[in-house]
Amino acid sequence: MDDPKLNRRDFFKLAGAAGAGIALSSVSKVALAALPEIVTAETANTQLPLHPDTGRPYNPVVTLNGWSLPWRMKNGVKEFHLVAEPVVREIAPGMKAHLWGYNGQSPGPTIEVVEGDRVRIFVTNRLPEKTSVHWHGQRLPNGMDGVSGLTQPAIMPGKTFVYEFIAKRPGTFMYHPHADEMTQMAMGLMGSWITHFKDQKFMPVDRDFVFLLNAYDIEPGSYKPKTNTMLNFNLWTFNSRVFPGIDPLVVRKNDRVRIRVGNLTMTNHPIHLHGHEFQVTGTDGGWVPPSARWPEVTTDIAVGQMRALEFVADEPGDWALHCHKSHHTMNAMGHEVPTLLGVNQDDLVEKVRNLVPDYMSMGETGMSEMTDMAAMMDMPLPENTLPMMMGTGQYGAIEMGGMFTTLKVRDGLARNNYKDPGAYQHPKGTVAREYDGTDKVPEVKRPPVKDEAPAVEVQVRKPNGHGEHSGH
Image (tube, rainbow, N blue to C red):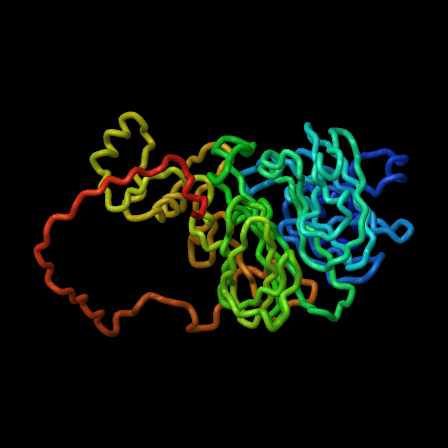
């Protein structure tokens, strides 16, 4: 979590500083006088919440591995400036992707407003093709809905359009193009929008997080996603980051926590939280009445949906938060690998080494061998890619990638302290341990095997590629 406080005044004061990872775009003073400042982010770190010093008050959100866009007030209107442009996004340390985003990053910055605000958003197109911005889920005039050709002319390269409407309905929304969507969203062009309650006493929380689910198909050695991919993605991300590059969600013990998750991938994601029960309190269609909520530990988020999850963080520890599709918690190297469980490769290894001297057999006992070998030696990888399982904890390899992070619940944190507190120190006697052998482990007793007729051999034709990631 970067340290500078991101209120608007300090934001511009610190712009360009290396520690902030935020910079003002180099535009003329005349242009700045006419339009809101162009502010860009240069790093993929989670920035501190942007507390408002103009306009209506609200309790700001924290964007996971992201930030909120500053604004200016002009004659009672809250003005923002988005710039659609090519960006370089660090997916995790050791891998960068050439994407399209807004204001220097993908996803773009979170836009935060208050119910009833009149909002004006300038959108400048620095992409090589035309674009638009759709304000997903919002109630607004039809001509502001951002569908190229239907409700507006497309924004041509080099041009700036302006959208203006009243933020009528509080909730969690998304923004993304409705122009060449297959290319532009596959390249990462998207962001989050929060409309806060006018009444700060309604559904208050202590900590409020937001992130988007998105996915990419970037082959090892490449930097640019395949834009024609339909389901065969190999990088499943929270806000265009994969574990261990995803920051933890840091909260105080007994905080009431809200986690807002939007899905702009091509499949559904069952998001699972360890150690706590939550309720789904909001969707992009509105807030769920208390009488209609029920406790969950996993909620499935379909394509184009948003879910707001709320709970009291009353169990200290480092708790996993992840998609429960196991192939969505792996990285690029986990795809198109044959299953070799139980296959003795000793004879094959010697033959292959005559052609590939550094060849190592893996998979006979499971894929943990990959992380074990990586810990013992410097395993070479193709350029600009990641191992399928990575990240370590205080007890060894975590063997996760993709859509995985942690909720870190701690006693005694300050109200605005989001700094990673490190590994949880478990009270004595509360960690699973190896059995000490005091009592003998009973033997497994099985009934004798009866002679049976030979089974009929069935041949199954498997599809090529990693199309199984559709979730169907």
